[in-house]
Structure formats: structure tokens, C-alpha cells
Image (cartoon, rainbow, N blue to C red; front, side, top):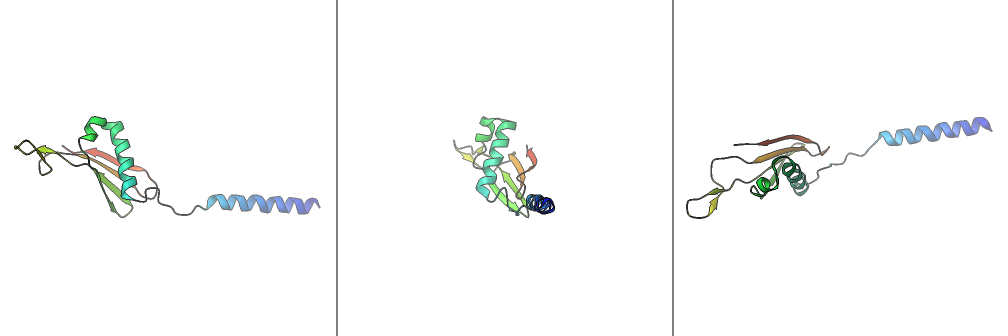
Length: 109
């Protein structure tokens, strides 16, 4: 009887250990909306809410397994409005689609 209990416990423990080692492949950042939300939170922490709000809307593009999220530059158009066709810089964040890790943060000038 002890042998049966010992074998059962060993089988149960090995099954549990193998079950934990396998995890299905899931994307932590499945779409552009999620990528933008993550990027905005990180950018606000680094550059401040006012600066990041001035660069909305943010756009996300997927290339391979990396989301690149970048802000929109707004400049005076000389007629009292603004334009996005100008020299300057905006925030950019690169995020791993599979792991959800921030790969890089930058702000061009």
C-alpha cells in the first residue's frame, strides 16, 4: 500500500510540475489600442502629462513582434491654427507584442 501511495504522489507531483512548465503562447499586447494605452502610461511617467497630452493622438504600428507607438507633432501653421507637417520631435515607445516589455523610449527633437 505504501508503494502505491508513493507512486501516486510521485506521479501527481511530476504531472503538476510539467503542467506549470508549459504555458500557451499568448500575446500580452494583442492590438494597437493596448499598445497605445501602455505607451501613454509610460510616457506620462517619464515626460509628464502636459507634454504627452500635447502629442495626442498616438499611433501604433506593428512590425514583426514589436509595436512602435509614436505621438503626433503639432506646430503653428502661421494662420492661427496648427499643422502636423513641421520640423520637431515626438515621443516614441517600442513594446514587445509577446511579452509586453518596453524595449525603448525616446523623444526626438
